[in-house]
Image: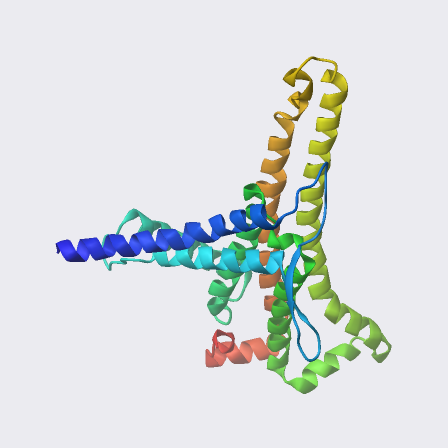
Length: 299
């Protein structure tokens, strides 16, 4: 029993390290690789190196590295919460994991058909956690992956593939015929509308997260300049101390980095559920599937 408890604690320690070390690595990487600069600098993700490829070179950027570190952290958190599950009773972490699963299942059931879309709960949960945690990385002073349009576009393209998959449930013919509704002359507009979904999801999420970071940085710089202008006549360190920067930048960081980041993650997850659910074929096909009770979207 003693050896079992020791082994359990060792695994817990390794899982905690799996959650913490990627975040520490992101901070260290930011400190080591970011060049020193004066004043305010607003740039995109830095490129670490490029791998030559036949069609197009593969660029490894700061956003990609941080996204992978976040995924490792989320994986460690999931393994930690599900370590030592019991049929009866259970620890506080098990109750937290069960609560999260119940809430996620309820969210999906409330916005998607529970018969055909129940299996989408893990996917929606992954999108929600990855988006929220990516935005919250700015609190550590590192580049948030959601501020890179390429990262968010990858999520939107994946969602677009699932949307198309659901539309094809009625058959390729019905899918192609949908581009001619209500009249054939609408074909160009329908094609544009088809690809507008991933584009709008991408720029909505990316734009809101990036604009928050830019606004917070500009306000902090403005307050620093104002503090230097107003208090610069004071002798010694009093003239160099950015007194006016105390308070407001922290409040803006709480709003843009925490509240707005989590809200954008929730909106992206909601749009994912609604677009996939609305892409399912018409009422006749739905009724037929219900009669057969085949959860086709579960696979």
